[in-house]
Length: 102
Length: 369
Image 1 (cartoon, rainbow over the protein chains, first blue to last red):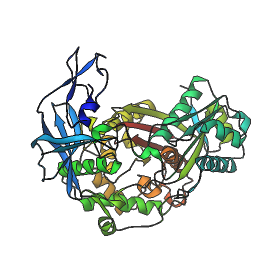
Image 2: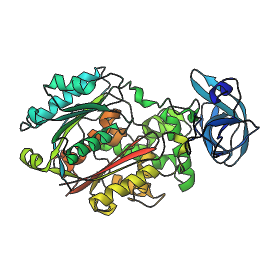
Image 3: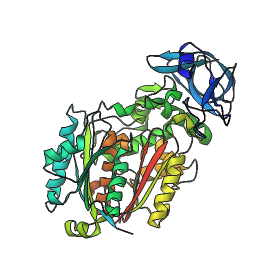
């Protein structure tokens, strides 16, 4: 089980160090703090909108999870700064990660 | 401290030409030798190539094509600040005594693979630089109550200044309304807010104090170097309204040169997008936070070319591997009082700011005569 195989199945999991328990982002084999091994944390994670802009009909937003992970996600409704959102859809398409939040 | 000087420069016009990277490198190198007849090829003991191009072994190839047999020959890639990173490497070779004279040649094609950082998966499907630029712009506008029309002045100013640069990609001037009416890429970014990928090459020779004085009647010295990498991924930035790596790199470069921002007479700033110019000016201390556009407005209204005299990246074009070298050539020419209609009065100390991947790394150089 690794982050990308889970993501390609539509599941967003959070990589965490087995030794120091820090979140490891971007996903990697080893912790970028102590080089400990990494496992994936399951959950219904809530993120916060940090910033957004819009291209065509979609908003693209910086969403922060666990005060650590920031990703750029798509959103169809007008976001608000500080708004709490959850990932509704994610995966890997043509080699690129994609995330939708609402 | 060992003194390292700039002894010779060469360039080609930036364009959309479909030419091989090897050809671009050779042409700017040829121009360098044409501009400086005192350079002896036999004195060049290192050749560094700055590029994001996928072609291999470019430094030995350039060396062979130019008839040079250097001790040291290799390429350097670091996305958009490959050029100044190569200059820093050349400086280090000379300062350490491993080389006495280094040729640095940077080149890129309009279709460079360096325009998109595929590794940065945190950007999701939004990997093109217009997306980080849009988010920087939105954040900056909100934080400091700056309008799109005010940011457009960066593009107006830099296109105006590029008009005086015979090697610039752009030869057009634009009004604020032209920028506002240009193609809308996102809600926060217009086409004329963006630097354009293009084909270009620029070459420079760094050498020891003794050799610089022998070759150049108007020597220019590298007196300050600062570099800082904070991350590789855009979303790792702590702020989307300032540039931490730029702030730290400029502090180091100014400290090394024993100057402050107030001493800088002329500067090339990495305006990959309009918002980058005020953000960089503020991060380096040319302006207080949120006041960078006041300085840009004032310079534009008074036709003062102090910031980005060659037209910046927006006006000159952005051939990634050549950009930092072209910026350094501009400041060299300014300090040599050789910048023609772009000349800034009494320019004695200049600064170059060159950054990569949404300001996740920055290089700042201070030059003086």
